Image (cartoon, rainbow, N blue to C red; front, side, top):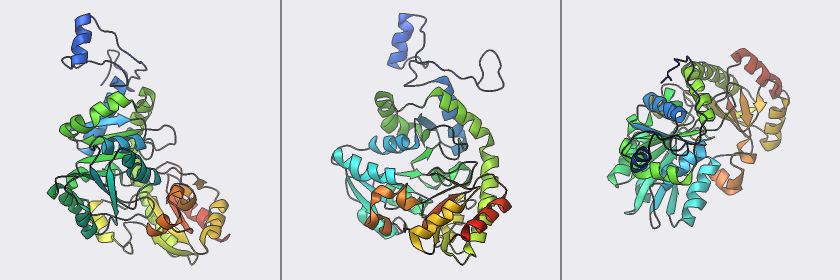
Length: 376
């Protein structure tokens, strides 16, 4: 989409509102009889361009952008439920996602059941007549568990419910949940799509019917709108997404193989390695292992901290999917609010580190880790 000036880079429409030629035009726009723009809380040309390209990349009929990944998750779930409804979710969720399911939804009178996502029998047993939607991440954050999306989708549909999948770790380059039966896919564009630590953003992708029934009015009326500038930045990120993901996952494979062989590492989880507990399923759903791995350092929190503090190239941050390699300690950062018992149940121990591989040379990252391991 270009303006009349034929610019090479997409135009950035920094505007709050739009001018109508006549009062009749304004009336028609608000009635939905005229497809033009009304207000940038609803729609914006730059944001719409990003939505169209994400829909094409994902293979979905429709897409709606949001201000952050968590606003995408919240809207995709809350838009489907009312007081008295029930939601089933995997226990292995990002901390903020657990908050939406366990705290926010219960304030709205929505019940929930958490299950071991890898156990299909638990998904089936959790279904109730009032279950409206199921929610999962695969691979999960940070344990890299792989959940059978197609099987869970069938369970949802057999029970008259929908399935929402957070696909942020795999990205649309490595996994397509809609093709596996999911009804809705959500992303934090902040991660791989931007990929350079600049802007926040989220995206909800589904059929046009799903978006219109569950998402559009909620976003329009409550206002978690993606700014046009952030949308423009994400559009630039999309141009290099395939190249970055391909290089980062190749690097991750080499780094994972190196770490798995180190005596100080108790265990390592990376989907494309044959020692991953769900390796076969991972390779059936995904085309590659992704950019992120998790590993446990012998010696617990103290040893994990010593390793992280000794790194020079790899930076300490709670983000992932960046062009820079990033390490974080989930138990004290992203999953801190879960509490010790919930973390232990989810397999998050005090020695676990999550590593997101960037675009640095693989040999340099391995050398950085080798040096840091001496501190352990």
